[in-house]
Length: 327
Image 1 (cartoon, one colour):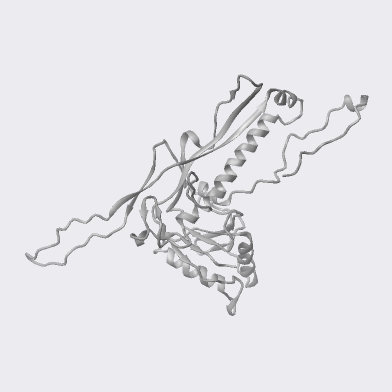
Image 2 (image 1 turned 90 degrees about the vertical axis):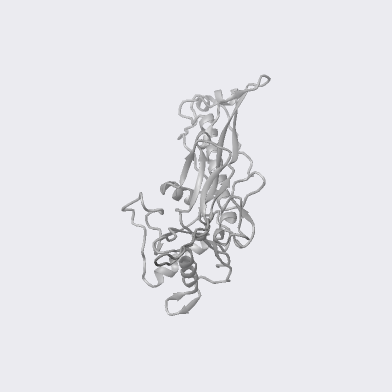
């Protein structure tokens, strides 16, 4: 952590009567952008809920059975269950906004950015940055679920949403652990990376129900762009229908999926996501909400918080996929 900048001035008449020029803006040199969070918002997959101890996703995990018959043949009457629900408890995150009376007064100079507003902005960005990183992480005792839980590197065991993947194969995401160098050429204009992406993409698909996001670390995204430019192929998001397009104009596409990078993706991973089956649930009253300020009785200072309450959920992990060893 760098030390705060210090200055040394001689307070002569000219300096004393001349204020520093302050543009009233910040240059952000610490926080990342949030491509996946933005994509889910754009697609309407950040769902606002009115509370409750758990978020429920109804799941059908088994087929019924019928009987071919003629005349007075007996037919199947056996009851079949095959319907259950996954439950996802919300998780909570809070960042303080703390300011003393003297700090607040001293930032009242005309032309200055108010310190309280700056601190609120800083805390809000901290919450968003943490939630974005958590979406690619894994749950702890109090942290929310992330893609490492829902789209696991090895989904043959473990429990998600209260459903044991070891017992319910339909609750497992697609995955591939084959070590692959993206730009390795299998044949003329056929890259190893695209060959593997195609396999996992098809495994995640059923008819027109296909992944609409492929998110990778920056180095793999660079390989994606290099491979397509090398063969003169540039199918890009064009920005003509932003309500239906998850990426930014200029992002490359593969089949129905837009490809973009996120700095929070684990190294060597590519996630193939179908946002129909992946949601970020958010508590309405804790939707990056600001709490009222409280003042201590023994200090001239006050503190509020920016608070998030929510959870990442899925209702069909088999339509989601991960590649774990792409370089």
